[in-house]
Image 1 (tube, rainbow, N blue to C red):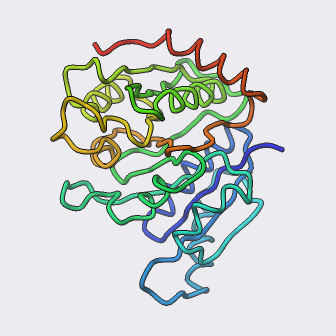
Image 2 (cartoon, helix red, strand yellow):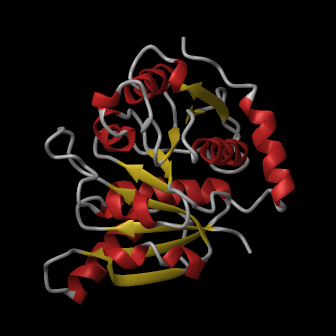
Length: 266
């Protein structure tokens, strides 16, 4: 069975999440699941939830149809849904750019980054939505996926997942060893992703936690206001694979062959 992409939909980010997730599902040949996220501290209005899902459906690329729809999903249950539907990726949105109003603080995205069993693609209101070419459509220039690599435990897993994404989308993969950079990791990744006009960025959830720039803060919390494109976070212990490599040996071989083709900080 093909992997699924789970879209975590709420009223503030519905259009960006639906278009980004729908385009990726179309390009990767993945199934699509929509989950309307129930806001905390408010009574649930089923009619409003269905209206939001209708907006999400309208924002999907032509021909992309969800195979399952969940209405009024509590935020904490989103972390459990991937195992039920076979999701390889969750797509969620954030809002806010300032340090004092961190886009991940207390949000659905933060819950997912901490608890999800698969990678989480975060679409901020600063970043343009992804627009993968449809299968079989030839383009003059390949897009780039930028993956951050440091000494955190999730980092090699994130780089291997980035390689799978690049292969599935026929994109170029650029691995950045941020611990060798002369700038804080989030700023190094921002600069390279902007220079490359990257489609996506990929990092581990604890990227930069042991950096020599301790006052720069968490890379994951900074990227919503810095990243020039959507970014994927691989949570601790996540099953990070699109399910196309088959056996673990094939995934390890793909990861090993990918790391040495990385470009260093320039």
